[in-house]
Image (cartoon, rainbow, N blue to C red):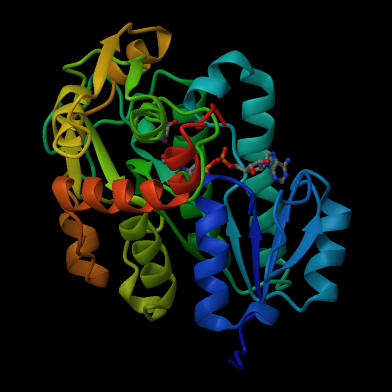
Length: 327
Ligand code: NAD
Ligand code: SER
């Protein structure tokens, strides 16, 4: 497929990048999509790959120039749990990575940016249910603090320099194609692999810890859609609330048990449960629906059925041989 777009995905080996980069390749042509990350991907990719840190401004600029990049999807970040263990590094990567990309846009080296924020911008002073777009944001993690500062920076660069930056506050994302990289909501991915491979799982969140979540397919659709709509449709240049599901680990356990009937689970909450306690349980995304037509496709049971089907397929050989082992 021919395209006037040339896309760079920074952080293309991560949980979202792995899926998003391929979807962009299918939509815009693999020769028009460049992935970049700190190290090469484990499996061969159809898209072009460039080894680069987003903190290496000179190398990044060369890549942008060499490939005539128009659109950047900036996914490289320290997430909530990993960030709490690496406060300085999390601030450096999450803020300076964004600043580099915003400055490329300011200097007209690229045209459009996608940068995700998170429900972690909210904190204990935010309403627990249906947290609104303009609800109080008093985050309690360095991750949330950096996302909130990043949102403000995006808004500032848009107002001052007219930069076309588009952003979504993703909830916890769950998919089967890739593994998560250090978040509080990672349990909701791990649980599927362990249920299928071993029939049991130890959950690091409390059983009643309800959080806003979303199937990866819906998150990818939202990401591609928000980047596709005309400039004027985007009224919010901080970041849009986005919602589809909210459930507790116990509710997810019960849904998984419909497919893995002897599934056993233990709950041993750790420090990640304390981070999760400060986040809202559900999100109001009226503005995303109104401004650019956001609508999710998957409910909890559809998502669980789809993930289980795909993972059973992936582990088929090991399941038949009885040789599944931890990945
Ligand atoms: P991830 O940790 O799985 O992936 C991040 C990728 O960035 C990794 O492949 C890592 O190697 C790469 N990276 C790290 N440092 C880099 C650097 N200096 N230069 C280039 N690449 C570097 O994260 P993810 O879950 O894919 O999240 C992507 C984005 O979405 C992040 O901004 C995150 O805050 C946001 N987000 C994710 C979720 C979620 O549930 N996954 C929820 C809300 C927001
Ligand atoms: N899934 C992310 C995390 O847990 C939320 O931004 O860090």
